[in-house]
Length: 441
Ligand code: SF4
Image 1 (cartoon, rainbow, N blue to C red):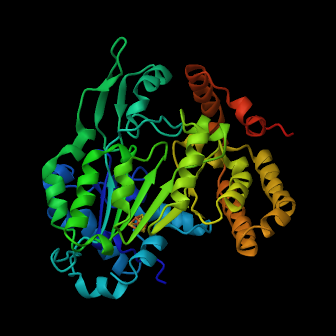
Image 2 (spheres, rainbow, N blue to C red; image 1 turned 90 degrees about the vertical axis):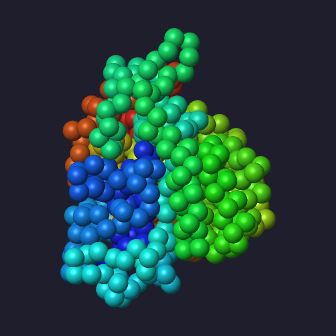
């Protein structure tokens, strides 16, 4: 496999929650240059500019040229870092996913010297749609641009009603007495633009994989109408739909539509089990999450369930228990963990060096302690190897840099948010709390 090729700069479409177009989800906040810009410096926005003109934007042409010269573009640094830590990066996932659709050789054959492509010959096959910020949860690592439920807490937490989002927009939160806070802009409602959905419908015959994410995408009504169009046009059985959801609630219409598609992958965002999950993905109810997960696992249709924890400071120590729970209770699911890169104070690199030694040793002990139980699960040996690999990858990423200077900021923000939400991190994960203080058990 090529060490630098990625099909996304050729056949991908990726939006931010404002509808602004970017290179891909991995290039989101690591580098503002990931935004696709017009010649006049303005951002391409999917609801305003449609689905054609961005494809030969300066950034994409440059990235294609760099990749074809055998180098890795700077914008792809997250994938490079994840691969170095032993994770399967998004680049590797996309190469595998699009193996039959678009290869390095196709890229060589279909790219002009200046990096441009003929968009009719190289159609969009992968769409990554971040449908605004409407959400019913306010997860710890998110903020107002990820979740509309976050507005009030953000103002209290930062004593500030101004947000600068990933696209560089300056946005004001309007707090209303006795009413829910709102924003002074509707840029996150771009998915209500009917012309965008009409434009996307034209691409249905070419689309192979659609990744839908929010906010909480199952709350967005317009996307159900689009799924209906995929079905009525006779293409649903060629399309793989992937949905990242908090699975707090799954509407009946979703079940009715999903069964028509080639493959439905639901990636429940489950970071830990029980109270810690409720703490991180506030205000989730764990019993509801487990119940909906059981329904998904037993649903009729071509479903693939990929539990998708985000590994961060809050849950790292509980990763062994999460994997054990999955092996024992939900053996027919997969698990694909994501490393949190930001906010920095939740990145696992912030643990004090002395605690990193403890965590590394603790994970070694878990490999011994949990071995028999894991070996007794369905596909025991495969699970055990996966378990060891995941723990190794997490420790290798954690130990790669010392970011412990961010610990005071972790405690400052966690303590304020705890008091706003009437929670206590010290209670839901005493072990992590002590390790962050550099104390051992
Ligand atoms: S290599 Fe990674 S960062 Fe670069 S375009 Fe592909 S998925 Fe995105």
